[in-house]
Image 1 (cartoon, rainbow, N blue to C red):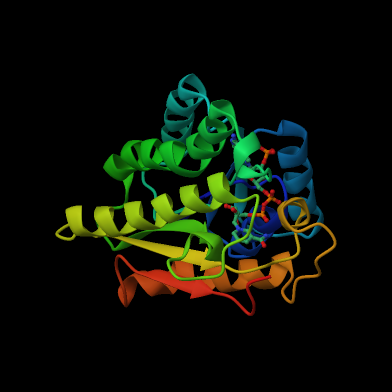
Image 2 (cartoon, rainbow, N blue to C red):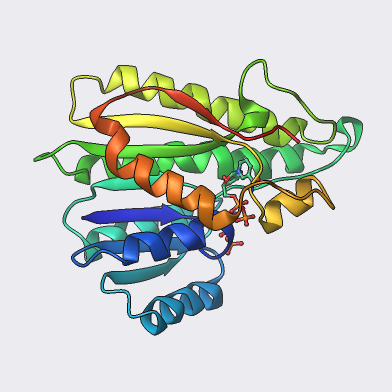
Length: 236
Ligand SMILES: NC(=O)c1ccc[n+]([C@@H]2O[C@H](COP(=O)([O-])OP(=O)(O)OC[C@H]3O[C@@H](n4cnc5c(N)ncnc54)[C@H](OP(=O)(O)O)[C@@H]3O)[C@@H](O)[C@H]2O)c1
């Protein structure tokens, strides 16, 4: 199975790559900006003797040029894609009056625009022979009716946009063999969580969250399409 995980240099994405790398025959494409951390991930997988091929592609998803190059690089490694997990995420934690246009642009570029652009580029190579799955990683902060938190208006509103994008694409591609689903994560212990909620201790580790997401990515597209699933023990 050919699987792309964005945001793979740390946190949940890092653990996702290791989980997928545990299955022989998989090709796992790991994307993030930090090339050194992606290499460390590859070494980690090798040290654990994980049998799958891990392909590290350093890329800034917020950069249109690098995003175009990324799709070419993906095609040079795999003929088709079975699973795309749009996990990379950017956050700015700032009171609303202090948020600049550049803050909004940065967060929306990574969390929404890059996801839309990458999906556009990957759809033509999604495996037509069997049902494939695009999983967008959103947040409880972007889940309608959930608790909201001061300082996270750019981040949470971008994650709400991502959730809605998922529903739109599921409808637009409902006659295709691609399913689109969205997981609205609650707190998992990562560096991003510490940036959003300094000092907060999450009830779920990055590994545990990754285990659920990996399982969901491999199975849920046979049961659902266009769904936004809240995945939360708590909303901190
Ligand atoms: N942890 C939580 O409690 C929580 C809760 C709700 C939702 N989420 C969502 O879950 C996902 C994973 O979160 P996490 O906690 O694991 O976050 P994290 O530890 O901050 O990791 C984020 C990943 O995204 C990558 N990334 C950020 N900007 C990028 C860019 N411009 N281009 C390419 N890669 C980029 C980072 O790599 P580089 O810096 O190397 O680029 C990193 O690998 C995110 O979408 C986040 O919003 C997390």
